[in-house]
Length: 109
Length: 352
Image 1 (cartoon, rainbow over the protein chains, first blue to last red):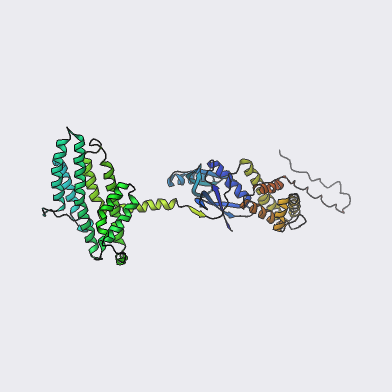
Image 2 (cartoon, one colour):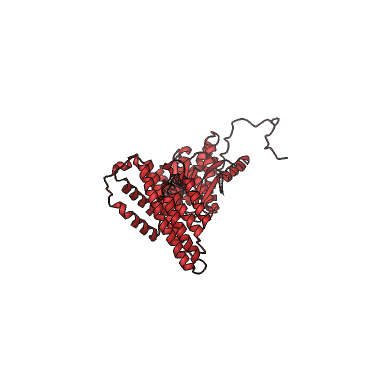
């Protein structure tokens, strides 16, 4: 499956705004989110996302959370695992022009 | 005053024992040695400083600064001897000039104030005279130059701090703090400190790597989605990826799914942009291959999303969501005769 790069604006209003945008892209691209990172697109700071194409799969909703340390991320991962919400990716993203640590889970269908 | 002298001597003695390759060399038996010179100078200047302090703080400040500035050349001299020694086993030609050139480069990167740069420049001018760009043999061994660069950088940073603090009053920057800075300046020129600073650099580089940005080229920036946009996109996706996908894989419902896809495509053909996209994808409402129609719809949605064509995406998603599910075809009449009244009638299950 091909990988699809996407770029989101640095001034994304909130973590929820990024979540809605990624869910929209997953639906329209028929793809699943695989990574989030800080990026630079032709000189502009962006949040760089990557998606893998899928077919015949209901991707469901995403859960975006900000984490502080790797220990914090590990705790969040363990909590969501018990709820049957798998880890999608852990990365960095711009929210309100600030770089944030973001961890993403997939909501239980 | 004696305590300060003793403290400095103890500190210098501590760092002067052991392998001389780790720090500037100090010879205690030599009356004209580094420590003795500094010590004598300190004793003299401290007497003047403490005598002036109660009645004339401004004079005390001048004496303090003179003490600092007069003592630093001793440390510089010891440092030059030190780096000369550690280079001796590797290269004997023009190495001082090379080192100084490297050191200046490092200092320029670290000290940003004009004053430190000016002083460093003046101090190093004497060494630049013999510098020849052909001294490339110096670079054959990389580890020692790197350590010297680090030591020079460390020293330049402490020097800049001293220059800044010299502007402070004697209350804010007392003699004890000044001597502490002098000792720090000495330590900055040791290999132990160079290794420590290199470790810190590695940690900082690791952090920087974590923050490394992904370089993209020509990827259009997708604006933030709204809740309505998300809901419409997800609804359309569920229809294509779940409902119709499942129906197309069920022989009993494949025809129904195909009819639904034909209706969606027919609705889209009424829109100019969507019709063009369908034509590019080679799809038509007259197609009878449901799988092909579904793939075409996925392709035109993806293509529209990739160029952030929100209007076209909305049109496609709206058509997918709003096109009604066609009615199930009526079962073809059987040729059997009138059913026997004895045959039980099938009734749908009811919830109790």
